[in-house]
Length: 290
Ligand SMILES: NC(=O)c1ccc[n+]([C@@H]2O[C@H](COP(=O)([O-])OP(=O)(O)OC[C@H]3O[C@@H](n4cnc5c(N)ncnc54)[C@H](OP(=O)(O)O)[C@@H]3O)[C@@H](O)[C@H]2O)c1
Image (cartoon, rainbow, N blue to C red; front, side, top):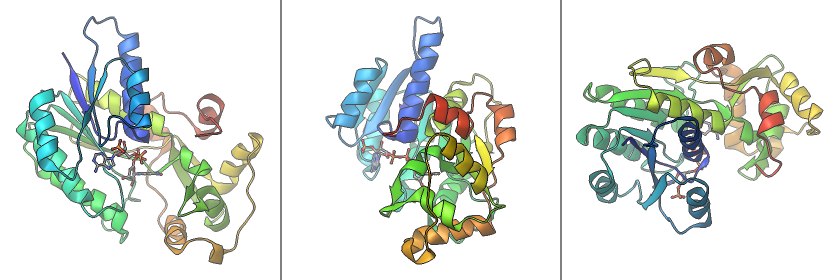
């Protein structure tokens, strides 16, 4: 029986892997569907219950990535795992420790496939941005692990979902619209396609993705092109003044002008043909409440 451990199973990317593996199970003739052991700090939460209700091959287990003993018990009691999906929250003090822990446990418990979802670091050896550099430290740790672990790093840029949410109480898209230079390419992907890519890698029988790093994108559009696509779908933004944008967010948008993200949508499609452009995603998956 193939068993996959999914961190963040109640979140955007981990939840998308759960759905992608459910799709795989539905489309495969096997009598032994892939089983998922999903991690959550609270299996009784509404979001956890919703994951279980929609996906028959998922068991959610209680555990906190900040508690190594608790997580190791899951590897002992609910494994063995063929694959592990590793994700951590950003802006937390032990993000690097959490990331290293999952890699170390995967080696200790004989995991074959390991996907770490990192972030697009614009091809820089050092970005100067703490929330990129924590992910880089986790990537570097994976590279030191014994070759028995077939790891793959995926580096998403921004999620399409960001266009419809606020960060630091400020609409992300409005900030992009106001600050990005006209010629800067905005690289984006849907979290559901991140899940499909991770599931593809975790279930790939050959070594084709092992020890590889993929910067992934579904769209690579200037802000003008992005906002044309949104306008066609009835979504408009007004330009804002810099001083209204929270300083850390403003810094990230300015960084994007100086160092555009690396991911290339065409290259991504060659490797993962199912990845959707922004326009395709808006037509098929976007829900106003997303
Ligand atoms: N938004 C973007 O544009 C973007 C782009 C690139 C990379 N990223 C990166 O994506 C990551 C966030 O991913 P996401 O948006 O998919 O996550 P999310 O939707 O915010 O969900 C977070 C998940 O992590 C779990 N979690 C949080 N702390 C945990 C802990 N201590 N122990 C166990 N589980 C824990 C939560 O589970 P429970 O609450 O159920 O415990 C939840 O499932 C961040 O590292 C961010 O930097 C984001």
